[in-house]
Length: 206
Ligand code: MN3
Image (cartoon, rainbow, N blue to C red; front, side, top):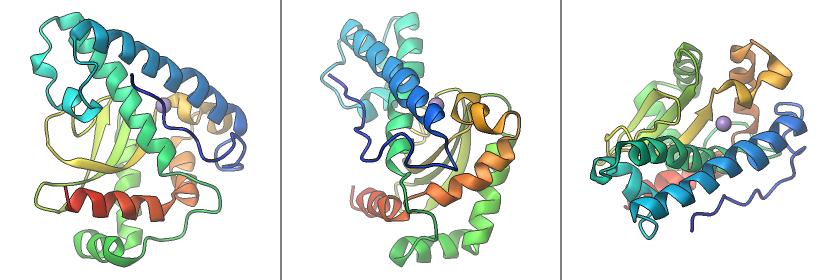
C-alpha cells in the first residue's frame, strides 16, 4: 500500500510563495488521486509489494499497456509529489551548505548558475512537467526536465532525483496565473536545502 508523504507543515505554511488553497488542492486532491490510482493499478499489475523506484525503473515488465501507462503516470505522480512536498518547507530558502554546496559549485559554477539552469529547464518545459536535480550512479549531479509525470527513474536514467520542481499549472495557476517564471523564482524561497542535502548523502551511499 503506497502512502502519501505526510506533510510536516500546514497548508498555509509556505505563504506567500505558495498559497494555502493551491497547497491544499495539490496535496489533498491531485496527489491523493495519483496515490489512490497507483494503489489500484499496482494491485492489478501484481507489483504492489515492490518499491515505487523498482516499479518505475522497470515499467517494461508490466505487460498490459494500459496498466503500464497508468502506472507510469500515476506512479510518477505519486513519487514526484512525495519528493516535491518533502524538499519544501517554511523558514527555508537560502543556499545549500556542506558537501552538497561544494558539489553544486563544482558542477554548475555557483548557486546562482544552478538557479539559472533550473529556471531555464522549468520555464522551457513545454506544457506540464518537472525540473530535476539528480545524482548519477557515479555520484555526479545532473539537471533535467521531463514531461507529464515522467521522472529520471521512469525515463530509465538510473539517476536518483534529490530536487523536484513541479511546473504543472495546478502547482501555481491560482496565484501566478500564466507567470510560471515568477513561481519558479519564488520557489527557491521555500526549498529546504537541509532535506536536499540528506537526500544527496543518501544517494551517494546507495
Ligand atoms: Mn503537481
